[in-house]
Length: 235
Ligand code: SF4
Image 1 (tube, helix red, strand yellow):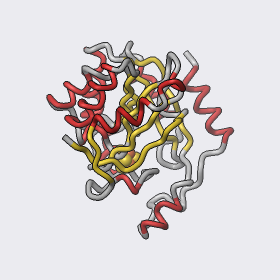
Image 2 (cartoon, rainbow, N blue to C red):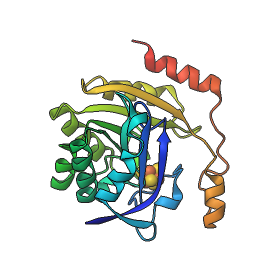
Image 3 (cartoon, rainbow, N blue to C red):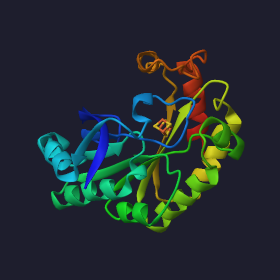
Image 4 (cartoon, helix red, strand yellow):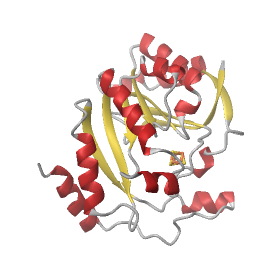
C-alpha cells in the first residue's frame, strides 16, 4: 500500500515530545480559515511512499529520538488515509519508535480506531469551543471532535490538546473558560497548548496564488497570549 505525502521534517521539535521525524500527509477535507499548511490540503499531488519507506527514513534519526522522541504523522490530515497511517505506526512500533498522531479528530471510523491501537500520543486540535464557529471557520462539527476525544478517553490514550489563538475569532476569556470546561472531563489529557496564530504561511498562499482568508487578521500580542494562558492555568 502507498500513501500520498506532502513533505517530511527530519528533526522536528514542536509536534510532540522530544525530537521527532514528522510526516506531513497530503490531503485534508477541512477548510480552516487559519490553515498554515495550504499546500497539503489537496489530496492530489505530493509523492507516493510505502509505509516501509517512511519508517526506513525515520529510522535514520533514531539516535536523536532518545527516550521521548519518535515519529509524528501530521498534515494535511493523517486520519484521512487511516489504513496507510496504521501501517506506518505498526512498523514503527515493531522498531520500538514512539508514535504520535497530529489530527483535527473530525471523524472516527473502524480504520481510525485500528490506527489508534498503535498510537502512543494524540495531538488533538480543539479549534473553537462552539458549534457555529466550528462549522463556519473549519467546516467540521465540534460534536465529532468531542466524540473522537471520548474514544481516546475510553482507550486511555495520552492526549495533548492544542488551540491556535486567533484575534477576533477565539482570543476571548469565554472561549478559554469553555475550553477548560471541556478539558476537565478528560483524565487522558496531559497537556493543553495555546498557540499564537502566525502569518508565516502568507508566502505559501502567495506561491499557490490563493488568498489567505486571514491576511488582514493580526497575530496575537505576547501580552494577550500571557493573559489567556494564565486564565487557562488558573484552577
Ligand atoms: S485541519 Fe489542518 S490541514 Fe486541514 S484545513 Fe485545518 S489547519 Fe489546514
